[in-house]
Amino acid sequence: MLIDLSAGYKYIDKRKRALSRLLPLTKQAGVDSVGELVTLQKIKPFNHLHVSEQEALPLTETSFFRDIYPFEALKKVVLPLLLKKRRSSQTLNIWCAACSSGQEPYSIALLLRQYFPIFSTWKLRLIASDISEEMLSRARAARYSQLEVSRGLPPTFLKRYFHPVGEEWQLNDDIREMVEFQQIDLTDEWLPLPSMDIIFMRNVLIYFDVPTKKAILEKVRGVLQPDGYLFLGIAETTVALDSLFKMVKFDKAVCYRLRG
Ligand SMILES: C[S@@+](CC[C@H](N)C(=O)[O-])C[C@H]1O[C@@H](n2cnc3c(N)ncnc32)[C@H](O)[C@@H]1O
Image (cartoon, rainbow, N blue to C red; front, side, top):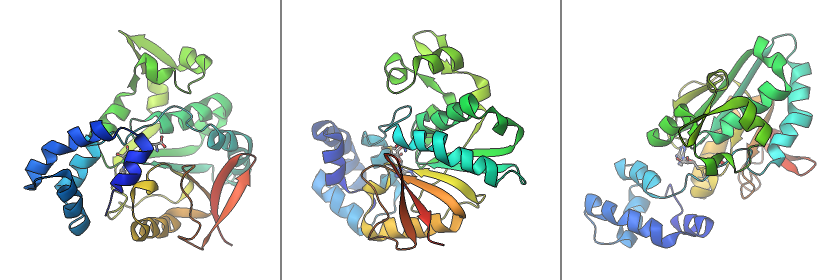
């Protein structure tokens, strides 16, 4: 099954709203209840309802610099190291998988622009993907409400890198253009991707069952550089799923690296 609905409900604690959004899908699926819909998804996980469920459930929660520690690890440890290690090729590839409405890849872009302007002279690719076209189009637009910019975004960044449009805030084009968006279903085949120095795949594995998580982590190993860094959400881990990853801590941040 692709989405662990019970975990999703606990996570978002918005069961009633989720149920009301799923009810119209029961009709589409030809079943009588949300319970039957869940059973149907267990039997036949890959179908058009999958994407509809994704878009019906509020499972797209995100914010700028969410859970701050991975971004601090990027700033203090990971990017300074890669700056040295990749000096000869001057190439840096970052993938933000399951990017939702874009706050996560744009947080990385802002961090790069603010603290590592040197990367703008490198061959830098910052790829962001999601399964949902609706989320991707929000992410590409890079326009956020007052509430969204008040969650995690330092005021100095708001002032420097955004401008007001009506009651919303538009991210400036030079930052927007740093991110390439693609639709990728993590459970499906992935389009060819460059070898990644850093992968952010946060708060999405929680929705999958164990075999699906294992299959995704195996594919992650295929695209991560041997000395690359994988960041997962705080409720996620590779432990007991993939022994070829090891956990590494940087202060309060946890990331995963390939065993040498
Ligand atoms: C909770 S959000 C996480 C957003 C961001 N990574 C963060 O941590 O703030 C989960 C995202 O995963 C996406 N997603 C769900 N299933 C997916 C799949 N099979 N492939 C790719 N993305 C998926 C959803 O559309 C949603 O945008």
